[in-house]
Length: 557
Length: 73
Image 1 (cartoon, each protein chain N blue to C red):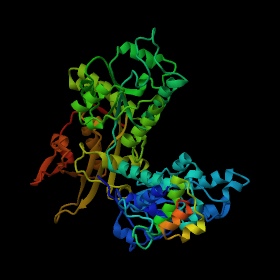
Image 2: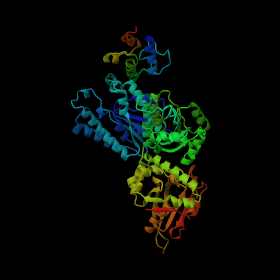
Image 3: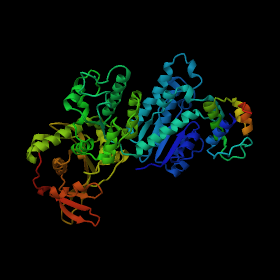
Image 4: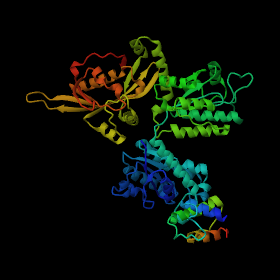
């Protein structure tokens, strides 16, 4: 989705930032500044008439607290009031960025207790974090980091403040505009998933395997430290959900020896979900990896110091992103940080993201097992799959993510935002099912969900009322597809409905460009098609008393 | 210095080269509004190290005055 309409609201003059942003987007022309809550709250305001897709709230904390620098009194009250009002005017379909706090003003340098600046900023920070954790469509705009990078003297100008309530220097306003562009990009694009890395002269200096003569460059000083810091950046990316892989031309044993036991190596073998350390052409290895991880080539970024390898990969596999490689060691870590922000950064990180490497590494091993075990049933038994029911209300963020991000195994492709999902959870006539899947290789996390609507259908004269249910949503992550887990899940949902006196279940399949894999799911489960429409959609029903036996190897908990 | 100041003004106002001359005034140029004026004062300071006093900055309406304050003519 490409985002084109944005709004920048502030309590200081942001017109120059808006002017800069107009080169890229349609930007809301605010009427002055300082009425940011007013325009949000008033449904008749020009802001709502404009209808921005992303709204940035760039707030100067000093103006919010109106120079009251006592934490306990005025300041906290003012901050609380601001957030309470903001929260009341958030719309579920909007995307909001709120700046974090940097308290700046002429009196700050003479505060006898400098801790108070931090304490005031912390009040804002706490409220902001709370707001973000309750609303999946609210994000933090890292304004504070920008000021820290520039330094107060370069970021703020009293002169332009006095001239026109413009708080920031021109340079700071240009950076603010760039920061806003970056966030709009992040919202509009699909993040990459896998970073494939070369080893020699990429993760360390020099060549592995010639260690006796030329030890590799990786240490605590000079360019050795530059490589170590690069690895630190990559490790942090891995912890935030980027899947790492190695595609390198080396002798595997030489390379693994360094990965395992070099004292300055930050990235150990377990950090990588997959590796191809061999002498095959790299593009062939990458195609191989894509199959093993069950991901499209457009999910990959490939990084290599050798321009020939980069050129070959980008010409053979144009879907793979191949960023440039810096000339100087001191540019390595910043270049990688830039790659992260440009290609991998996600608007929101969930717990599932944090465990991704393990899940994909486990999956790669599962696929290897599948290749070894001849018989599919045997393979499923060996997996020892366990499906556990999870509380939907306690996992609403994951539930919303699952329902909105799943394209393949999605029977109706009905999307719910957080607010709508909250309503579904509170609806007495609907039941929400959420499942975690584990197997002998590890925990896949929460990967499947279903929403069922229950109806009481009045019987015809003389007959009893019939309780029936309709499966309006059924999704499962493609990570766990192809193991008949869906049979166990649908059966579990049916059992729960039957226990409540339901006799008939209806369901439907609505075709999209992506959900072909589940086109005949309900047929396989023994449902009968009762209506077929021209657009390919189908309505089904099943009598719960007459269900066929379904073959799966899953333990339900 | 005169040329650099004029070039900077054209950049801030986002007008084609040659639009700003020694004789240009705020009334001549639609792009030279009050916001652009503050930006210009900021850019003169940040880019060229030319500091114009606050009160004078608010009063200036012509290119000639800017050049005078900057000591460029």
